[in-house]
Length: 218
Image 1: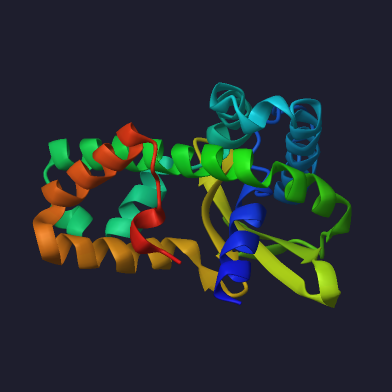
Image 2: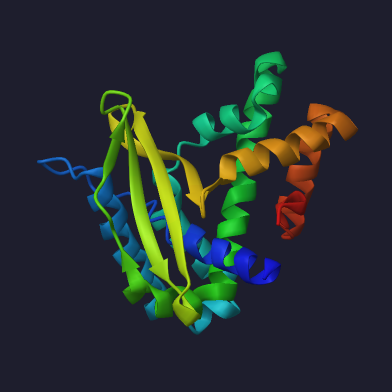
């Protein structure tokens, strides 16, 4: 069950639809951005489903085009460090933000290469309940329901807010569990063990060796 949940979480992470959809007039709603970019992701995986298994460069190109531009990396970095962000120097903040971005990119690329077939097969089983707005329409929750085998349904919420006039994702909730909070707990444990510089070095090392194992996140 634990492995199945972990695999499902990785699959739906890739269905975030964190796409760099052009900001046309009228501006697409957060829900529309998610739906459109999900289609782009699935189309790209279908086109490259064989090559992507052995060529991570293709997976990275897809991630850079479809996934990365809509993520609020600075905002997520602040959130996952919590109080440690406030205590960090400017240099540490910059290093952590860059290292965490590269770490997440590696996680997406690895999962995309491993679970391409599953992502494609489940794409037709995604439904989008009505959009929820919070905090005076400054925050949006894009809800999705993904039907898996055996009748299991996975609810994934994408929490988005405005950054520089555009909607950006700053957290994802899988089965009611915030991924930002998971990282915050894991990173806080690592900081207690080896300090913030130690955490940053660990992220940089794991990204550099191509083994982004979520630092124990399961």
